[in-house]
Amino acid sequence: MPFIRPLHFYRCLPVSLGIYLLALFPLHGIASTETHQASQPYSGRPVTEIYNTYCIACHMSGVAGAPRFGQYEDWQPRIDKGMDTLLEHVIKGFNAMPPKGLCFDCNESEIAETIHYMIDNSSNH
Ligand code: HEC
Image (cartoon, rainbow, N blue to C red; front, side, top):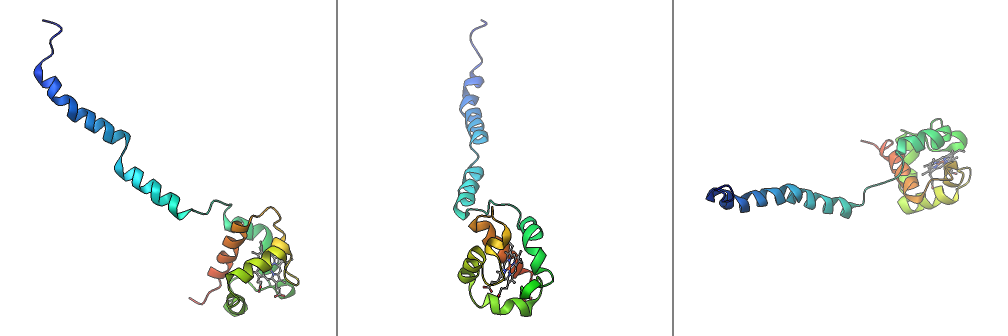
């Protein structure tokens, strides 16, 4: 009787279907995708690349009074102004600080991340 399959084949079918679906749509994978989107990760260039290409020219040694990278006392009065002011000053320019720090193709979030990078590496901790 070649066309009649043994009974246990049909009993196993729902179980294997369930395993198959779980493999296709792992619950963990769905959950972590949602958290990922909610936090909106930074999607620009590496900030070290931006800093090392543009900002370092003045902010390493303090050209024209630029707050020096890694120098807490240079940065403390700047940090006190608040991030919004700093971001505006960098984008529009501020005294000898040129607009966008000469990184003209930098977008706002790249500038903001680079400022954070400089501040984080110059804080007193
Ligand atoms: C041509 C030199 C030069 C370059 C390039 C430059 N800066 Fe500056 N920056 C300055 C100077 C000078 C000041 C100080 C201005 C002042 O306080 O009068 C300054 C100040 C700042 C401040 C503090 C602003 C404030 O309100 O106190 C931030 C933040 C900053 N720069 C970020 C950057 C970033 C980010 C880059 C690179 C994308 C960059 N700078 C590139 C010269 C430069």
